[in-house]
Amino acid sequence: MKLKFLSFALLAAGGLSTTGAAFAAMPDAGTMLANTCLGCHGPGGSSVGPATPTIAAMQPESFLEAMKGYKEGTRPATVMDRIVKGYTEDEIKAMSGYFAKQAFVRYPQKVDDKKVAEGKKLHKDHCEKCHVDEGMKDEDGSSVLAGQWLPYLQYQMEDFVGGTREMPKKMKSQVEKVKEKGPDAIDSLLHFYASKK
Image 1 (cartoon, helix red, strand yellow):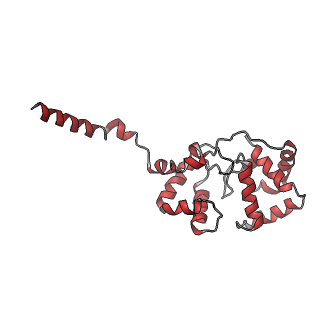
Image 2: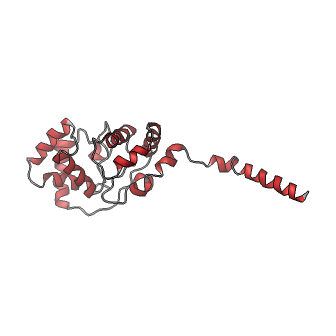
Image 3: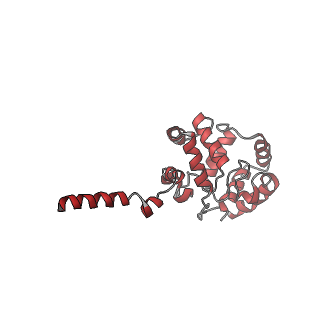
């Protein structure tokens, strides 16, 4: 009799553990899926590795466009082109919603103050129409540039300028104008974005 009662009690307790407070604490699908990205992209999507972008505060449209580029092979990648193939469209959408809600944490990094000052002027003259609020916001697929790691920004610009990654038409014309300012102009612009806190 005692054994039957003990078995019943254990079953009942097991049932309770999947309901009530324990069940309510289960994260949503977007959060669970996004957790698979944090090993590379950092807590909440704010990168702590200089070659990896912060994807926190990335708008869903930008996130979906980036993932589509990796999946189709139109956006250069080291591992993302393989990783993205493991997710369905619905899963990618769920992750995009999660990252859009996360705060972009900016970590201190070493920049050249002279280049930052020059880059600020170049941004105002050539980039602020699309990269609003000094690159702090992701609007219309512009992505957040302010506070991204400098090496990451440099790698991306090399891909754009070298033709490995397709540059939007409006960006291409402005990049050409920036390049006309001198051999360090592009790098100055990137130092400006990296300097943002």
